[in-house]
Image 1: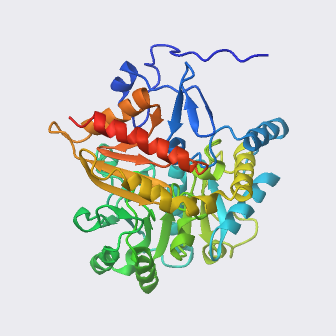
Image 2 (image 1 turned 180 degrees about the vertical axis):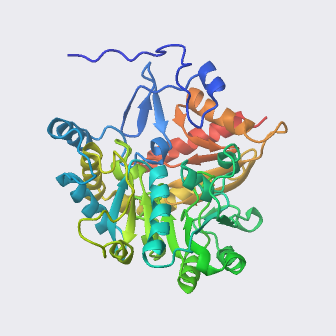
Length: 445
């Protein structure tokens, strides 16, 4: 039986209110894909589009990987759904054990959610509950960072630091403060990897502690690499200093690794790259290589055990989701983790980092390029905005790259961000950079 040909335009497109999208512009000139394989998407008329973003930072093993497809299909036949409230199924326990084994130190316990946004809100709730059950219920303040992104739940946008994600939604959670961001273009421009300048930005936490007192602060949450804001690598020594200050004042440290987890920076988690053990790690995206939604929180042993002191028959944490540890997601995760291990994709990303950075930095000197940053298999290019305001040139880039060059990228205002699947070859890196170069030149005027 042959599959029906994909429909280029299923209707007038108005019914779907697209997330984080300029809906009117998109619907005038859609960027539609109908299938994917390996490093490429394909449009409804079968034109290839190089995936420069691993979907949305998530398809780390590439597209349509047969072992993952087979695992999902088999699981759907055997067990389509099972609740995680008071019941379990084997694969979710297997997935938790595999994920915990990849995490550093005593990050030994995994709480599953359905997305990165749910993972961030779960970590914040676990932090608050932890201090409650350990007799320090006054520790309720949550500290995020300017330019941070922790999903779109009310907790995540409260600690997040991207203004457009916050300003439409009122006062958000109370008792939240923000560290200064870590980016200083004057001293960090065109850095490969972690910039030398900026470890002292972590000391801003001391200012916040002096203002609020450590007895009121529950947790600090940061992305090791600030992703959605335009890929800001941590300065050398910054994360280590943040860990020291949290230890000094008895504050939990949460790494949001929804983007950086599962090989993006050449390691299972960025925590391993930087030799820092946070108290919790949030994850999503790459855990299933983007095939089935899944997220979660990995917590250290002492946090989990703090909840385990009551009567055996009493629920320890009144939190969870209908789709926590969904059978299809668990099966997809196990298959994706197998591919990462068997193909050495984390190690491959680490080995390619230098050549990737050199290729991306070759765009220095192109029209309107004011900064370039690279870290792992992530690149970001800041373009000078047009006179009519920020974001116009960036939107022209995303449109032209797709329609004229057959390339999918991301933009944040006038920053181009790209994070290809970890299976990308050196020749494909050159192809990606060539497409970007032509696109940047095309929007120069």
